[in-house]
Structures are given as structure tokens and as C-alpha cells.
Length: 100
Image (cartoon, rainbow, N blue to C red; front, side, top):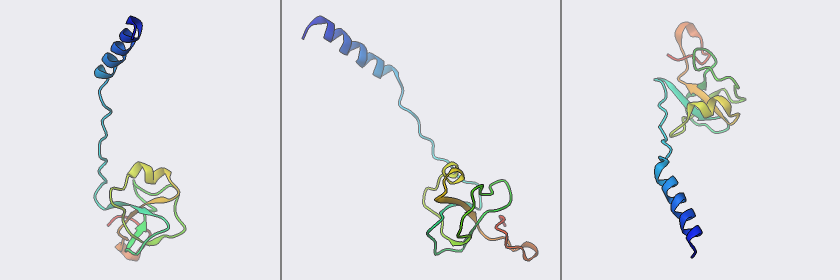
């Protein structure tokens, strides 16, 4: 190997050593807010339609949803396959999907 290739490899190795690994933070969901898959469900959660975490895309299936493990709130807000869901509100007889 010639000197030029050795210098290029050394510079590349030094650059990789300086760049830190990207941090991946686990996103925690607020109390009573879950991420559900829109086309699967055998649970008792409903799509949130009111409040700070109302699902902007909605879903054809509005009730009977089950929470996903490790659901990501940002993904649910932008995906047509995932929805933001919660326990149905029973305040005043309203079942509009608000958080209790």
C-alpha cells in the first residue's frame, strides 16, 4: 500500500472517531394517551378526537382499538396506519374520545 492510501485511511479513521454516535431517545407518551394501529384492535380504546393529542388524520375504525407496544406519538400523528387513542370519556355521557 502506498503512502497516499495510508494517509487517506488514517484520516477516515480519525474522522469516524471524532463523530459521536447519534443518540436515540425513547419518547414517552402522556398519561392516558396511547398509539394504536388503525386496522387492528380487540381492546377498549377509542381514537382521540378532542384535546391536545387529538388525532389529525382520524380512522375508519373509531373504537375497539388496542395499544401498540413502544408506540411513537410523532409517528401516529403523521401515519394513516397508526392513530392516537385513549380511554373513552364518560363525562356527561359523551363518548367522543376525550381523555378521562
